[in-house]
Structure formats: C-alpha cells, structure tokens
Amino acid sequence: RLAKKEQSSVRVYDASHNPFNLRHLELYRDLKRALAADELQLYYQPQIDLKSGKVVSAEALMRWMHPDEGFISPGEFIPLAEQTGLITKLSRWALKRAIKQCAKWQVMQNSRVGVSVNLSCRCLVEPDLIDLISRLLSRYNLSGDYLTVEVTESLFMEKSEQVVEALNTLRKMGVKVAIDDFGTGYSSLSYLKTLPVDELKIDQAFIFPMANSKQDQMIVHSIVELGKSLGFSLLAEGVEDRVTGEILKEIGVHRVQGFHYARPMPIDHFCAWMGAAQFDRMTEAGGQ
Ligand code: C2E
Ligand code: MG
Ligand code: MG
Ligand code: MG
Image 1 (cartoon, rainbow, N blue to C red):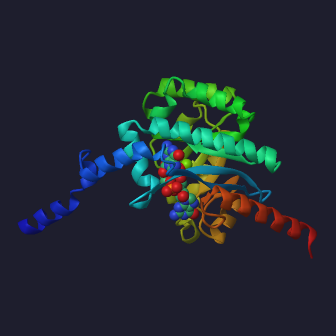
Image 2 (tube, rainbow, N blue to C red):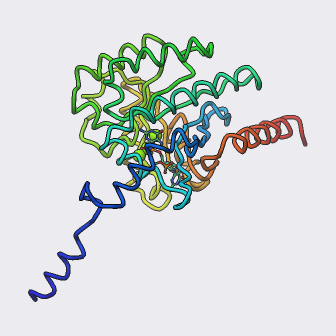
Image 3 (cartoon, rainbow, N blue to C red):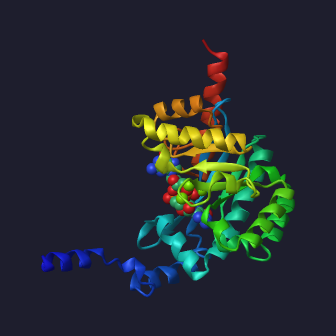
C-alpha cells in the first residue's frame, strides 16, 4: 500500500511546476531571442457570423517555430512568457502585426474583416499599452472597431480597477472587449454586466460535448439567453462538427469559430482560404 502511494506521488510530481527546471531556463533564453530571430508568427482563425455565414473577423494566435525543437505550442510558451515578463514584448509585437495585417485587408481586399488579439493580464495594466494601441490604429489608419481584445475572466479578479479603466479607455476608442474561455472562471453573468465587456466567448469545454449531450446544450443555451439579455454578443469556440454548428445557430449564438470551419492558418493560407470562401459564396448565390 505504502509503495503504491509513493509511486503515485512520484508520478504526480511535475517538473513544469519548478520554475528553475532546465527546460524552462533554456526556453526562456530562446524565447528572448525568438522575436528578433523572426521565429514567431501569427496564425489567423476565421470567426463566422452564423446569420450571414460570412467571415467577420479572425483571431490572431501566436506560433513559435523553434530552430531545434520545432513547433512549440502557445500553451507552453505563453505561460512561460507570463511568468517571466516577456509577455509584454510579445503582446506588443502581436498587436502591431495584427493591426497592420487587418488594415491591409481593408485596403487590399476591400474586406471588412476584423481582428482579435489575446492579451494577458499584466499587459493590460502596462501604463503605455493603451497609447500603443491608439498609435498603431492611427498609424495604420484602422478604425478601432475592427479590433477586439480577448481577455480571460481571471483578469477581473486581480487589479480590477486598473483593468476596468484600461478597458473603458479602449472602448472609447471603439475597440471591442471579449471575455475568452467564458464559463471556466469564477465571475457570474450578473457581475459581468457592470464591466466594460462586449462579447462572451463560450469556452470550448462546453462546446466539444454538445452534439452528444443535452446537458451541455442546456448549459450553453442558458449562457446565451442570459448573456444576450444583458446585451453581450455571443461567440462559441471549438466548433468541430456540423451538427454542433447547427445547434448553436438554433440556440442563437451570433458567431462561431472552430476546426469545422477552419483551423488557425498562416497569413498566406488565410488569405487564400478567404478568397476561396468568397468564391464559394458567389457560386452558391449565383449558381444553380
Ligand atoms: P484561446 O485564446 O482560447 O484560443 C483558442 C485555442 O483553441 C487556440 O489554441 C486554437 O487553435 C484552438 N482551437 C480553435 N478551434 C478549435 C477546435 O475546433 N478544436 C480544438 N481542439 N481547438 C480549437 P492555440 O492557438 O494553441 O492557443 C492556445 C492559447 O494560447 C490561447 O487560447 C490563448 O490563451 C493563448 N495564446 C495564443 N496566442 C496568444 C497571444 O498572442 N497572446 C496571448 N496572451 N495568449 C495567446
Ligand atoms: Mg482567444
Ligand atoms: Mg478561448
Ligand atoms: Mg484559452
């Protein structure tokens, strides 16, 4: 019995909880160089309006192609960047890239596709982050309402006054605020109504099982009903199959995002995909 207990406690030990483990130190060192070495990229995943079937925006998701280790998931390097403070630099880079790219879509493709950027807690309370966003919008001549910032619920628990102030300022510039991974945190909907928020992104954990679970459908349904009545826009992420998309449409979710529609893509794939999607719609409308 004792031996078994010991064994399991060994298995439970997780090196990633030790901030000084070697892999982390090496990754930290490499991540510091990654920006300058041009190893980071933004991938874009379409967000689709369920009523019109059109792509209305794209979420920018960071990718790191490490020279020796290959692709490293943001699930690994974003927490590391957050712990070490590098996230500030990464976020500034992502904002610049995404805003520049979005402005390009408006001009080159005459499209009205917006862009969503993920922002970590500590970035939002950086004193000059708001200035940076404002400067970038005017430098690239992009109207603020093309930009959405995605923040997580936990953000509001910490430093709430500073965060609320920052988000208020952003919204005055027309920038939209989305709560990412909604439903996994602690805030209640009634608490959110007092916060400067435009959109709820319902977490994938509720969406994945929906097609086979009445219970999950009911949970999503009630989030959508209450969210809508409080004036929020509703987006579901992690839609992996057609059936789930149809249920979400029936429930009244405004927008969807997920592998069923498209995976996150490097920018040239994204543009090609957009072109093809437009063509599909044209032939659908004009064909038969
Ligand atoms: P997130 O913002 O909640 O992004 C959604 C994640 O779900 C993305 O993972 C996306 O690729 C994945 N996804 C989208 N649709 C589906 C689907 O249908 N099925 C499945 N299984 N997955 C789907 P990714 O790109 O690995 O990013 C993971 C997380 O890393 C993000 O979660 C976000 O919290 C963080 N992250 C990514 N880029 C950035 C960034 O530029 N800044 C910050 N602060 N965080 C970022
Ligand atoms: Mg996100
Ligand atoms: Mg999410
Ligand atoms: Mg997430």
